[in-house]
Amino acid sequence: MKINEEIFQALRKAVFEAGSQSSFADISKVSKQNIHRYLKRKVNCIDDDKWENLEPLLKPHMPRKEINLEDLKPDERILLEKYRELNNLQKKQLLEKAMEDEIVSRIPHFKSAAGE
Image (cartoon, rainbow, N blue to C red; front, side, top):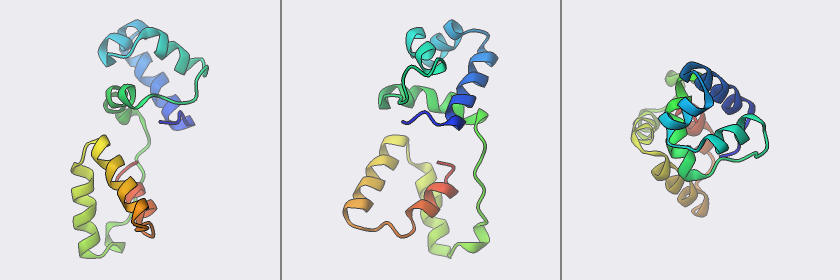
């Protein structure tokens, strides 16, 4: 996962809330060294296995992307609800498959609506 400004700020807030980088590392099961690297911007990507641990802790600190559900068709709403129920690996696999099958016209819309 690329460390964009939203993720960086969410990480700062989560570490502050935990009290220290060490405490946050213990909570997240991601090494203190990696947390330090992320905060010092020594790396610009978080490995998928580490992101799986960090995402649930960072999500409350990230801005929620809004979409007007009224703009969606009923079948799109159903798809969005099902998409939101998937874990991150399943989402990634689904999006990769959709890209392979060239079903991309609505994907950015759904990713935004799902809070990605």
